[in-house]
Structure formats: structure tokens, C-alpha cells
Image 1 (tube, rainbow, N blue to C red):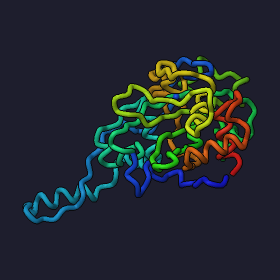
Image 2 (tube, rainbow, N blue to C red):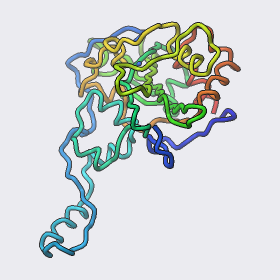
Image 3 (tube, one colour):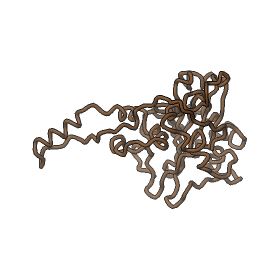
Image 4 (spheres, one colour):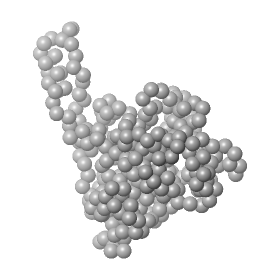
Length: 306
């Protein structure tokens, strides 16, 4: 891993532990079919599990009933969501409604930021169709077959240089175009070794803003500009109607294809770094000012090179 970055566990919480601090699709949009992709029972009802409490000021019968609920096995759907982690919940929860009690049980799926800021929507600003890549076609770093389900490959947490506050969260994932719920009709043999790779980004923004303010000026004399211009790849604005999911529109992802796109696991790798570190890495690899496939660049820099 490169100098200046800190690799954290894929199952580590989405937010920092100490500081209370503070994407349109470029590929082909697929239509969903009637085929269904088995999904986890993520929308089953769950029970709120209270902490054990003292019998003081409570009658003994109520005390015993409360603690019996605490001692019962955790609901299967909640246990699955806990294993998949907060990032999985943040992405999937944009398309599938989770029980409202989950946030109480599992905690927030958003990294902590200052109270005067809020998180933007997820914008899926890049999508690349990759054919014959051994790493993306492998079980270790990608998807082995169309029956494997999608996969979140990489999470990048970007922090401001001076304040240490998180300002961007970047996700790269992949899915199989022949999976049920994504393909139209029967699987196409020519797509068996193809993988769709997407990149999603959410920014912090002021509460009064409707969308994040991006630094997309022509003068790349600051770290924010280098990072945002690399991510946007010469686009000048965000369009949520075409950047609402890896398939384009947000509603194209449904309960019957959400596992085929996002899978059911935590990200393969997670990296934290500051804006200046990120910008210097892009500059040193000569990719900050050229037309590239940003999702593939990030995989090469932060996952495949490990």
C-alpha cells in the first residue's frame, strides 16, 4: 500500500472512532426482467432489543420479560446486516426499505460529520464494462460467475487536510451483466467473461444546499480540484436522474436484483486518506488530467496493487 494511506478492516464501522467530525451511468442501462434474484431476508421485521436493566423501580415480572427478549437469538436479517456492515446498508438502503428500528440496533450507516453539514445522495458517476480481466473474474478479487451476486470491492474515505473531517466517501463495485434481474432474456454467451464496474461518490455539503458544491475549475492548483476533476472526468454537473444507481435511474434497482448488484458482504478493501495524499497519488501516477476510467484506476491503485 502506498505511503500516507491507512488500510482499515472491511468490517470497520463507517465513521471515525474518536473524532466527532463533521454518482450517471456511463455504460448501457439495462432493463430489469421478471426473473428474480434470491436476496437475503433484509426486510423482515425485527425486534428492538433493549439493554438489560435493573429491577429497581420495576416489578419483578416486567424485569424478567425485558431480559428474556435481550437473551433471545438475534433476528437473522439483523445478523446478516450486521455482518455486511454499514456501507452495505447505506448503498442497499437507498433502494430497499429497511425497518426503522435497524438504526437503533445497528447504528448509523453514515460516517460522523459536523452538525452544520449533511451527506449528499449517492451519485453513480462512472460505469465501465470490462471483458476478460482475470482479477475481476476471480473469486478473490471479483465475481466468479453470474450466480455469485455483486460485490463491493473498494471503499475510500477521504478527509479534509486541515480539519481531519470526512468530506467524501467513494465506492467501487462490480456485478455480472448476465445475472438474473439484470439481463434481458436468456444469458448471452459473449457476456460470460464481462464484468460491469461502477463508482459511486457521496460528498458532505451544507444543509441549505440541494447538491454538493464541486471544485471543477480549470485551474488544478488545489487538492480539492484535483480530486473532484478526476472523479467527474470532465463532467460539469451532477444529474441524479441518471446517476441514481449502477443501472442509471434509482428505481432500476429493486428487491429482485439488489443482491445481484451489491452482493451481501462488506467491501473487500477499505482505505482512509487525506485530500492532499489522494491528489498526490493521482499526480504521481499521471492520471489527474487525462481521460481515464476512474473506477478501474482506483482498483489498480488501492486494491490490485496490494
